[in-house]
Image (tube, rainbow, N blue to C red):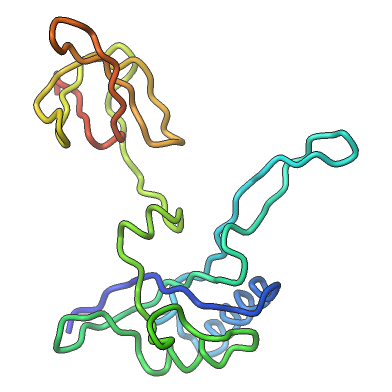
Length: 184
């Protein structure tokens, strides 16, 4: 059975997210479970709030009542990822944890698409082109089209490319990894 790592979602009492994350990390240290419990995260966002007529940046939990945990998994006979019994026991019996997210509280790992959409992990894309460069589209409905880069936003993972369609230059937005430098 091949070992792998997947993200699971742990449900906590409201307001206990930081305490649960800290307690899980302490158990990992004390029991030397670094190979089983790889990472504990509470997805946060920075928002601007008005306080006393002043704009203040504040960190806020994206999913109150939930903690994301990256665990080592093994695949069962049906090729479904499962965590070890020890890992399940440690997390499930952490003070403040009410269970795992999944049917009948049976832990179900997040898919790769869910992990990226929820912002739990950021996909690192190397950009080997700049504004003004000629690029070729490598994925999606415009696969094979070429155009000139107008704008790149690495934070939002998009690039705007001017593609010639029907005799007109048309700006089209792509994800950073959907285009590559045409020159090489």
